[in-house]
Amino acid sequence: MAIPLIRTAARLGLCVVTAIFVCPLVPASAAADGSHDLVVPKDYPTIQAAVDAAHPGDRITVRPGVYREQVVIGKDVSITGSGDRKTTIQAPQTLTPGDDGGNSIVEIHNGASVSLSRLSVSGPGSGTCDDGALGSGIRVLGGARLDLRHAAVTHITDTPAAPCFHSATAVFIGDLPTGTGSATIRDTRITGYQGAGVVVLNEGSTATIQNSTVTGHPTVSTDGIEFVEGAVGRVTGNTISGNECREPDAGCGPDFFNEFQHAGVVGDAPGTVVQHNRIIGNQVGIYVAGKEIDIAHNDLQRNSYVGIALQDGSFTVRKDRIKGGVHGVVVIASAVHTNAVLEGVKITQTSDAPVQTFECCGFTATATVNP
Image (cartoon, rainbow, N blue to C red; front, side, top):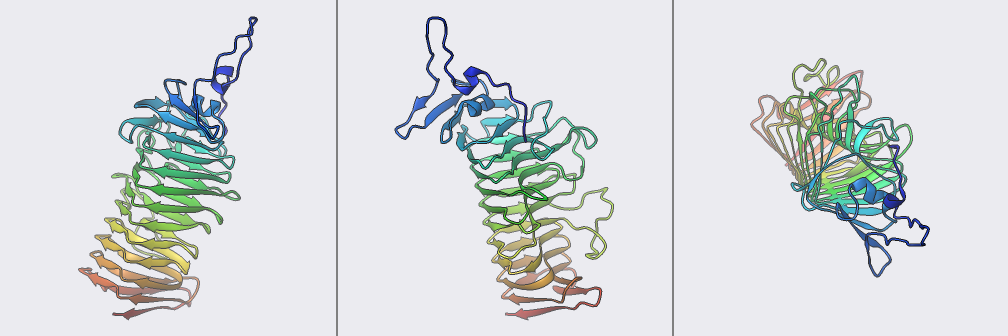
């Protein structure tokens, strides 16, 4: 997201030669490898000023405080705060659209490899669905890569929170019709978004999400983690909850052919792995389409419609535990003949059939249950 930046010599770390040829030193300490350590606000008053001054490979340390600013990063840097409850990048009053035309609090682009750790990125934004909606907390596009650890992305909503179309995703990776991004997200809290927790978009985009918490908004319909349009990734060891239809949400309901459902994890491309997660209190726990999606050893509880929905492909599900909801597993055929093999899947306390098939348009759905 290309934000117009006021670039001064001081912010860029350039040396201004005066009439007496005095040149101040760049306020950063140099390491043996030639990289520098820049400290905010000691050396630079804002995080963006430090990013502008940094050279590729530099490290930026951010002291405790709330930094009300947009940050745009197009170079390889690391930014480390003092803890996700101590250092906060807060959405400013006015957001400037970035590379994809949307508004984000932090944008990473231009093929940069960026590490963010021990800080939080927080809304809410001050816009509305009609004017200046908050597009994302962290936006990764243009072939960039994000490493997000021991962090938080919270309150990614407009004012007031509302179900704006394609807005308020906590971490948004990749782009359409062209463009990719990638991310590793570990030990991170993602909460209170009004769109989705993590969206990974487009073939070639990837993400690994591990040991993190993804919790939807209490009053707006949300999805947890989405891999769509050919994006792939690994979702392991997370707790994903609270992604449901909220009133009013026209068109949302249990009819898989004619209505929408909101899910903890959504995937549509071979190679995606969903293992060892706790997926609780969503409308659908896991909703996938296609084939060669690895679903195993997940604990799915109280997902109101169904624990796992498998649509239009071939699937093997292994040793998941499903408790509560209307159905444990549903197999849906709407575009191709669909079959699912359930290996050692334990389903308890459903209000209707533990395993259910739905068929449409001349295609068949079958489920084989093996102990």
